[in-house]
Length: 280
Image (cartoon, rainbow, N blue to C red; front, side, top):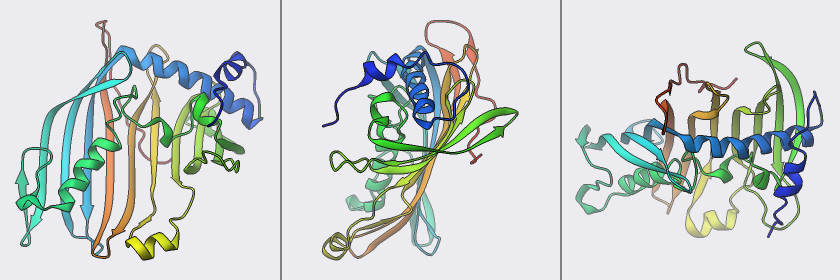
């Protein structure tokens, strides 16, 4: 287990002035992310989610479009489904259905996979924004498992930014799963965009014995600053290929957009405007 060093990290949160030390940059990011997670508890918002499965030849086999209203809870967030549209391929046609969890004739791997993706990758009730905290190593606790490198400083939409790469620390204990790149606002020390991919390969023995392989597994998330200085993830997504149990192969994609932000206990409203979903 990794020791909980949050008090030590927070002690450096008051750091000011420009720096090119990646450890110092991420220390400030971690502190601000911890604060942002609490600030997000004051907001309700609207969430749009699209999940698609394609065969390797490109043909669509299943897709679901869901919309949720998201409200804060004492320990995280809660989603309420407000709109749903689903379609599955059958005999060369796309057939519509209107409820999550639908399975054709009771045996439907695609149905179970889509339902699992919709819930597992964007429905973490212990998270203030629904996104699993361990996918992106930004908080002070998650950062302790990673090594960071400053790749460049650059201008992003008229403001200075740091481009930082990260990878798991080779400590042999509780090794992290992801590696990737983060673009960090050099003024607010908040993430603008983060992209991750799996840091290790599935062992060949697993592929041979279980017929399971995942290629291109990774996710990206974009953040936006709102009135009051609150940063919130506004878009999130990923694409990957899965081959399992020797006969099942799918290209999978998931995309999410958060919008219509509104204070839970006040009347002022914040709209997301342009969603910065593309890679900077």
